[in-house]
Length: 408
Image (cartoon, rainbow, N blue to C red; front, side):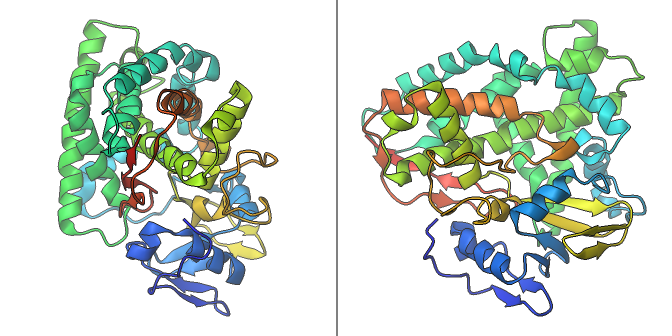
């Protein structure tokens, strides 16, 4: 996480050909990807990442432009079918709104959007406060202890489970299914990874279909009821299961990482938490800087849908391009001294939540959770400090902590 960190031994940059080799599982890259991003961005901000086999963009302007360019999308015509043994996973995944373009995307997002608008999410604030306080009441007296399982994980998991209407006691199953499914997006995945993702997708789908059937018979005030009872013209049964899975996965996977990373950023900064969270405005600024400094998602792909020219490069239909969120949000062209965690810097728009029509639906909920959980953590444990270097997990395209040992 330091500007002077060594570059990974697997990094090879061919600036003349705009090609890069870099294993995303390289331990040095897992621990700190930002020196690699900086070296790549300076040499060739739009490049072919050979380990993935497609173009990637590493500068803020291009990433921002590609997020918003409607000539790029997720639902690319002519894409080759997936291997037959992975079909159950892709059958579920392909029906989520994240993988669709208008008009299907518009139809699905409009249905669930009202549950995630800011005024609806704000009503959850007392519940987030109560969850945070209950967890803090149960903290060890001093430590050391791992902040992730005691605080960063339970809050997002409980909130999204309650919002959708699944039992909180099922959280271990939800997390296990989610981890197995997102492994499908990692480079170098094995047949064992693929088989595990298929088993998880089938189990998750069956679980959600059972809950959806129960809601049709006995409606409640939750998102599953909304999905289960909407007219067939708005959402099919298969789409309901797929989007419930998406909301559960996205609602805890990325937000767990965001909360843990934000806490690590504050603890590692040497700044006084009392100043960072002194007012609601200062809290919001600290949360936005934490999201910029350590976004939980680092790579999001788009596919060219029609001929396009971006950043001086011609894109043909079917061309995949990876948007490197983690690199874009450390671009010095947008943020002076970008490798410094500075909640007092002049605000500038980051892309931690993406952009365009696929801007993160759950952004208001994630912001609320961070704006409640972080101030409460440091108000209740003002002497909290790191008990060792944060350990990062080998889970790219996510930026995820494996452990965050603290004391105090």
